[in-house]
Amino acid sequence: MIQRIQSVYLLLVTILLVVAICLPVGQFIGSDGIATHVFKPLGVTLADGSFQSTWGLFGILLLSAIIALCTIFLFRNRMLQVRMTIFGSLLLIGYYIAFFVFMFILKGDLNAMSFQLGWALCLPAVCIILNYLAFRAIYRDELMVKAADRLR
Image 1 (spheres, rainbow, N blue to C red):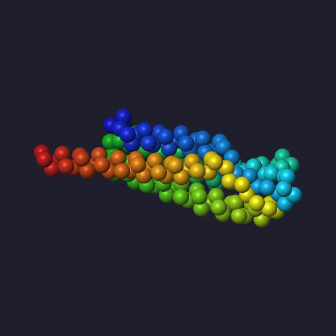
Image 2: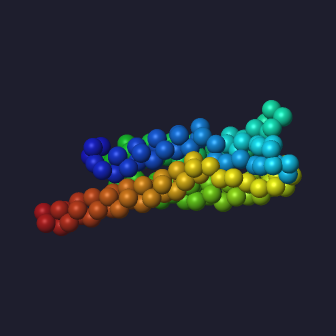
Image 3: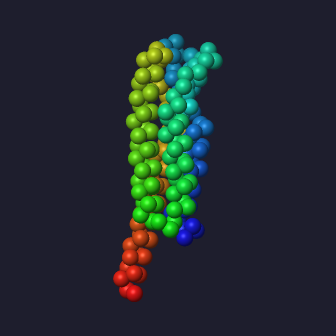
């Protein structure tokens, strides 16, 4: 069962979330139009070299990656696998909510004129889609097993 398509989806989720942890999700552009502050899930690197932590975003992405990796090995208990996949998707939705809260708070604190989104911000959305595809495949397997049990 570990070679099923849902395992591939969940492995892709894990890989994409690890990549999303490492890449910047955007940058704040200062009021002078020159100073930029790089926003990564672990924190914001300010133009003067100092660092302001946003460890909550990092924690959510790391927890989602760990859950996706552990869910692969729960192939014997498909209903728990379904629940863990849904929980991972809910965590990623929570990541976007926390991201926008951090973005608006930091935009005011840094006196930034604008915020430029990075392409790495779309990776958790792709992971939500992959989690949904894994959920469908797991649930399809569960229905197939229940149908086979009825025939016996």
